[in-house]
Image (cartoon, rainbow, N blue to C red; front, side, top):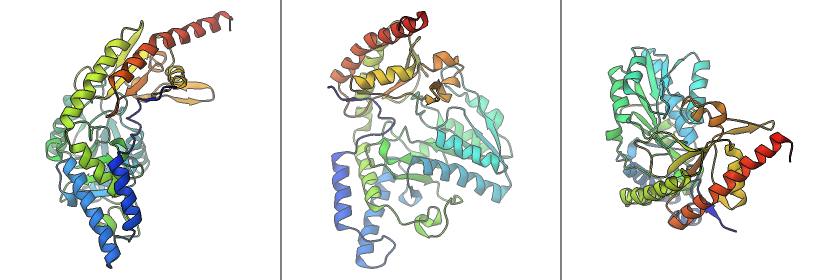
Length: 390
C-alpha cells in the first residue's frame, strides 16, 4: 500500500539530525538549566544555543525569544499577554483581527472579550485577502492589539504584515503575528515584518512537538499566563523542555539553509499538482492566486464532501486534511472557508493538500491520478443514495 503524506501544515516528521540532537540532550545533558552546578550550566548552554538558532531563522536577537510549549501557547501568550499589558499601561481595550485566524488566536481573543475587551473584525474578500485600508479604518486610540497571521493555515495566503504593522503603530497599537505556517517556508526578518510579537512552532518545520517560541520585541514585555518561576524572564515560568528546545533549535538551523531554493522546488510541485487536479470536472481552488506559501493547495470538488474525499484518500494511503468539524453525523464547513463568502455546501467540499520537503513529483502524480476516480465514485454514491439505490 502506498504511503503519501500531504498534511505537512498539520505536522512534519522530525529531521534525522533533530532526533539525534534530542537523544544526545536526553542522555548526556539532563541537568536543570536553572541550576548553578556543572550539569545545570551544561543544560543552560544548550538552551541558549537553541535560542540563538531560533532567533537566526527570523533574523531576531536571541534575548527576544521566549520558549513555550508550542504554537498555541505562543499565540495565547502573545495575544493575551500583549493585550493585558496594553490595558494595564494605557487603558486600551479594543482588539482587531480577521475571521481567518487559527483557533489558538480566535480562542485567545474570545477569552479577552469575556474579560472586558472589545473585538473588531476586519473584512476579507472571496479569496481571503485583507485590504490594509479596511484594517486602518478599524484602528483608533483605544486599540490595544491587532493579531493577524503571516500565512493562513488552510489557504496558504501570505499577508502584507509590514503594511499592517505600520497602520497599527500609527494608532499606537501592538501587532501580534502568528508566523507558525510561514516560518521555514518563506525567508523571515522580524525587522521586515515590523510586528511586535511573533509566534512560532517547532513541529511545523521538522522539529519536535510540544515546543514553540514567542519573539517579543526588545523593550516590550508581556503579561505572562503562568506564575511561579523566573524562567524565560518571567514571561513563561517553568523548567525548560531542554531536549525539545534543542530539537527546535536544530530544526530552525536546518530550515534556514537553502530556504528560497527549497520553496521554489516545492512550489513547482504544488503548481504541477493543482494543474492536474483542477482538470477534474467541478474542481475549484480556495484562497488567493497571489502571494501564498509554496506548499499549500486548498481544493474543492462540487458535490463531494471534503470529509468523504479525505477518508477515500486515506484508504488509498494518502494523508490530507479538511478544516471541517464532524459531530453527530453532520459536517460543519470550515470557518475559514465560510469567511470567504462561500455557501456552506461548497465550503464543506474543501480539502487541504500541504506538501513538504520530502514530497516527490511521483507522489504528486499518483495523488492527481487518483482524484478523478475517487471524486466520481463519491458523486455516484451520493446520486444512488438520493434515488434509493444504495
